[in-house]
Length: 442
Image (tube, rainbow, N blue to C red; front, side, top):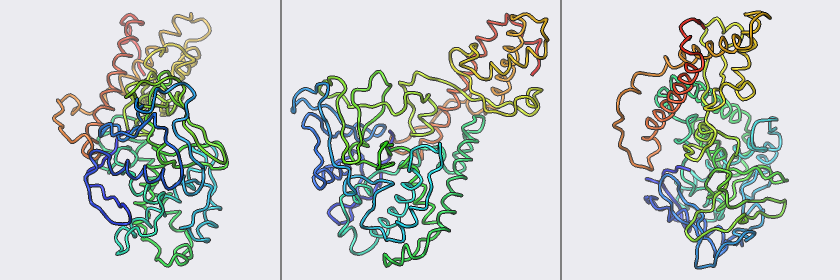
């Protein structure tokens, strides 16, 4: 995961401290305090280490504690409200009015991590509270280790396209990622506004504080949404969705290179080695074995160089004759097997339309070629909408940890990735259709 540590404000032992978190030392310290205060155990066979701005803090094998063997428990802790921030537990800093309100929040089926809506709201209100504590004279006096840990997590929203500023999102035009980011941004603001309106004033009155402004709450809700998207775990038990300190340092790799697995129960959580791990090697898990290259970037904010699944989504322009039959899409084009109907729904739809258009007398080869020519023209139409500035050499030179400054680079990388994959697919279709592209119209 990519984090920004520059000009990050941290609080240690109740005192505000402005530091440059370019080596993760303060975040690691917050994690160590968390382990000490909650009684969780980190095996001496691993250590927490700064792995650079692009990966943040990770968990690394440490020879001093002995070799890591399959089945070794690397981290273990109790799943209590002192050690995890859960969608379904109660917390001492929250008012009874808030707990009653949170109980009314329903998690929509199929909306992702179970309990994520409740967890987002809980984190948003906690962030408001922590912000107010940070500017008060008493600072973090009396705050729990869990609260201090949450305050130490670097901001990640600038890495996610849904939370880019409007000008940066504009750079994604030409890709379906632009429309998805625009809709996600609008939905986040609508959701935050709706929750803000429904929050009872008694939630804050019981805590002896004033209700935040809409602007204050929206900012906190966006940060909370980014934290849930990039760091939350689906426990599959009564805990619902959780932020789990230290365990959330786990970085991603492809499924075949995963060397550890985590487990949650109603009582505890643990991290266990799935195979031997050599000294200095990072402990890694697979975030989602079915996610493709752009899925990982959209959801987690990093480009997965180990991804084995590569696809690009295209839209059907309203000017196309296919628009009335198929709609606008999006339809995804896989890097490989684009000519296999079961792995490319657009190919299936175009084949069915070709069969209906050519009639029963048409041979299978004629139907296939007609469908491929239609697909080729759709790809060419999509290629035409990529911006001209992609053809100019990039002159971006930014700090590795500066996520805001890296947004133009990320947009460029997305557009070039899509354009190259589509151009490659178009070339393969041209080879299959033996130069007959000019005979078809979309």
